[in-house]
Amino acid sequence: MLSIPHTRIVPNCCLLLLAIFSSTAMAAPVDDASDPQSAISPTDQAIKLFNGENLDGLYTGLEDGKYEDPRGVFAVTDGLLHITGDGFGGILTEQIYENYHMVLEFKWGEKTWGDRAGAARDSGLLIHSSGADGGYDGKWMPAIEVQIIEGGVGDLIMVAGVDKEGVPVPIAITCETTQDRDGEVIWQAGEPRQTFDKDHYRRINWSGRDPDWEDKLGFRGRQDVDSPVGEWTRLDVISDGGHIRVYVNGTLVNEAFDTTPRRGRLQLQTELAEVFFRRWELWPIGQAPEPGILQ
Image (cartoon, rainbow, N blue to C red; front, top):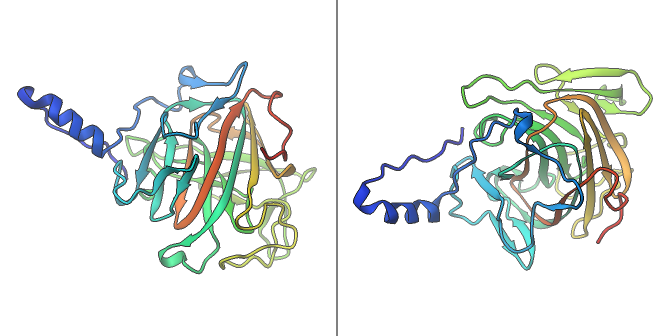
């Protein structure tokens, strides 16, 4: 689990120690993401979570480095947010958000790492993140994940974990679902609604996920709507109260109702695959460009 580094301050050298601490670690905010009074919603214009210049408003965490990033896993390169994929962890918003239309544009890089060198390129957008940094196996804050993986962009996953006191964070969603040929749960509009939580089935595949999906590098399903490797994909996530809609390049691929939680920080994962992001914005609901329009 990630923990905030502690520094003993000696009065006569406090400024020096503060400078050293600031250059080697990024301390996480201490706000409670479950507190509705702390949540921000966009009102009259878009909030740019990534400004194209630096990582202002964000902080990073790695399973093996906590708040330090000695390998430069997260960087701004040529105006893009570049995640090398070298390790497990994420980059998180300092602020807590609710009720928004998120626009996220990404493309895969070429590099994969470690045990996933030959596996499908994998990352993820985690929304409604609440609890302890690294509360899931030392990697991510508990959240509802909008999956970003070759062949599975738009799957919904409950990332279970604990809060800062070690208590499990409640996570649940309700979806209209059926099952595919192999019995896996998939979203299908109009089917009966079922509620899923962190202790039961924790994944709802997007509607067109190929039943022959394989965890191999470069996998592409017959109905995939995300763009090929090296091209930009637009992901839209509309979070309105407990209602979530997920669009990939303009196609509605997943939907959830009555979510728990309904607000929280936002995270982009590093999960052993290189990925670039050029646009990460929160728009007022009803004011964003129509899903599918790349800019």
